[in-house]
Length: 373
Image (cartoon, rainbow, N blue to C red; front, side, top):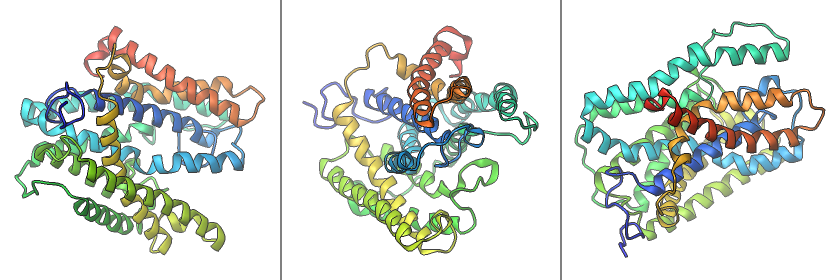
């Protein structure tokens, strides 16, 4: 057996060929994001397209369960997306060259963003406003909704292709390196959130309060691909990351309990020069860095069989793009039904994942959009 990845048929280097474990990991992440957005639409857990016009709200007990389940995932999911993107970007730039790579990114990411803002999302905004009995422009201000991630990835990809200066990197990645990165992310996150809190939109709603994490994980992935740090993830390093990630999750729970006992305002945890904001930033740094590496290790060990058919893989990006239309359509269809938020959230979340992937696959396999998506 090839000890490099735990499977005999796995390629030696990340990014040089399609790796089943990365494909499966992306599918799981996209499904998790869609599932989470469906529930956020019926709560005040975060901000989603349907949240402001929801007709029912989940019960406090349900909200607590979702905070425990979805809270840690929400803190590191996009960072993990960018970590995976960083892993595959260097080989793509090497293969295509910087100019062609940037052109391809502008087509694959830029065109969906532009089409979403100008053509496809305004009718959905109009339908939601009509259902809620309010009036506003369907086009202004522009609303990226979930595609803010595509904007961030586009900017990071262009920056990497334009930079590409050689850096002195260690031959072997250690747990100490990762915890230093976690500390840097935590410190920068705390500083940024003094002015840009987690619940704030920021410029173009690009979630800039989490950019220290995003930049750190994209850079970790790109550097790891260059140096072969994750080919495969060493078992000892994975165990260290697992322990640190569990500590991060436990810290989040302890901070939530401390906030409840002390009566600390929730806003203190979201930003500002408060101990609570520093605590959240520290937990986020631990969680995002270590859980990303640990998840990659688990994927290499358990998700590396060839993907049969590959419909979900082929349609994953398209599913991410169309999820807003699918979730809002389902929520509006259920809007007149006189039931609690929990049954609606269950239907919209499960059906939303299935329909988003189904529609995504149809778009890439049966329409010219497959050249982009």
